[in-house]
Amino acid sequence: MEQKRNNSLDLLRIVCMMMVVCNHLISWGGLFPDDKISMTPMWFAGNIFFPFLLPSVNCFVLISGYFLCTAKFKLKKLVSLWIQAVTYSVGIYLLACLFQEGSTFSLIGSIKSFLVITLDRYWFLTAYVLLYAVFPFLNYAIHAMDKKTHALCCIVLVGIFSVLANLVYISDFSNIYGGYSFLWFCIVYILAAYIRLYVPTRVKHQKWMFPIYVLCALIICGEKFLAYIITPHIFGTVKLEGLFYSYNSIIAVPMALSLFQGFRGLDIRSNACNKLISFFAPLTLTAYLIHGHPSISDSLLAAVGAKAYSDSVLVFPYLILATIVIFSASCIVEWFRKKLFRIFRIDALIDRICDDIQNKVTLLLTEKGSPS
View (cartoon, rainbow, N blue to C red):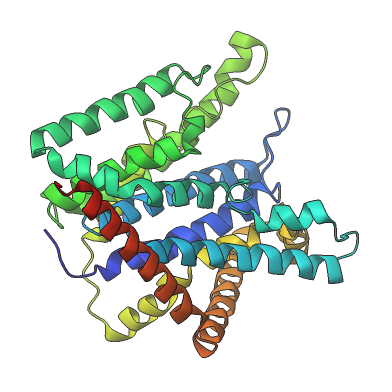
């Protein structure tokens, strides 16, 4: 079992957040819309590029499960995450009310911005917070299983919620919501725990990990192209064009696992690179909290202006540049927020209160469980 923090997985965390930002610039910005009448060369190029961004969410959860499966629950981490989310949700909402044309302050709007997790304003954050709240119980079950039982558990879960769910494409019988759910996060967590406990850092066919990732992306876009060509002759309209685009699809799962294992096996020896990774990795979530805020997401997309290049090959370098700028700017904002919290000792206060609460609850549960 690995004890040292793997910086290559922190690099993957950074890459995945950039994937999320780029994904949203494309999908929310309508850069490559599904035009069922005329499919332009740029439409084909965009739909070849887009599947490469698909593993981002699964990889985020794999990274979390990989480290949390041997960790202990810390209330202060959960509370700090909630405070970070509320800070940006409320702060951006108020700034939008002050400076954004058409935005006005309302009591309902302010309440929604404060109840950022329970009202599911950021679906990923809601699912992740729920996962963090229950991970000690998942760990208890995971460590109670031997290797064979854990492997069987992974096979059954993937078989039901990925393979079978994808085969029964027209019905979400498992309520997995295409992987946009707390349940799917729990399943990916269990997969990550198996990798951490039983899979070596570099497997026998390690060199094939990145090619498998590329192959999966090409299968996803290839299926979409075939759906546009074949299904209109069968159904009279385009069907099944998003067959493998869900996070729990039978292609998205091995795609994420191969990308994760590929990065896991990297050996980053450059001190400069490691310092850069260590700086940015803890700040990555902020890029999601800022650019994904419902009050400014449309304005941000308009300001970026990527759609102006949608018919040009320049759209791809422009997308990459815009992604890097949004990610970097968000990380700098988060660095200043953390700095201010340290200066005013807010973090220290949160840690002290949370540690006191957790210690008292642990002591109370221990006393309750002791024989009288």
